[in-house]
Image (cartoon, rainbow, N blue to C red; front, top):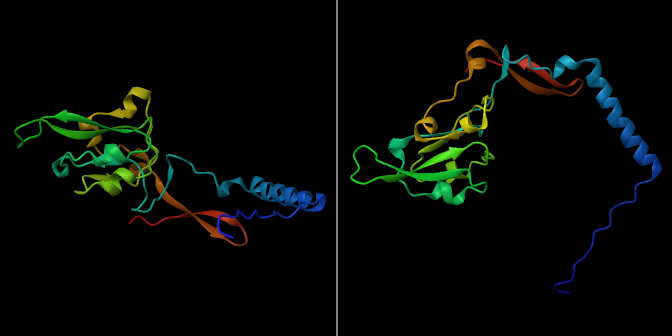
Length: 175
């Protein structure tokens, strides 16, 4: 019959399955408690080597921007806003994006929708701001690479899954 909703029945959980599941979770926690160095990242002396496709902080290349406003329209968190500035080589002020990292959810819709690739993700996620006002970037701040002292001073690591030991931290090669 069209339009009829069929409800799926979930299997009943018995007291034994509930206890078994909880004991299993506690045992996993105890395993990692005994050897906590598996997860400990000694930041800034170590940092996680991220893939180049990682959706981290966003940067603007102003020369490529055409002021189409697609990035601001598609942003689900309303983190992108357009401001008019006088751009070199243009007769009239042009709308260009600025970002508010207080609101940004790093979904990447703005980067994906940009027709000229003026917006790009940086493989960086560990930036520290000392106050909320610094997280609202103007046009100049939106074009700058973020400072990551750990990448200059630290050792790159990555986490891999070992079937016997779980997640394990291993040195990463600098690419």
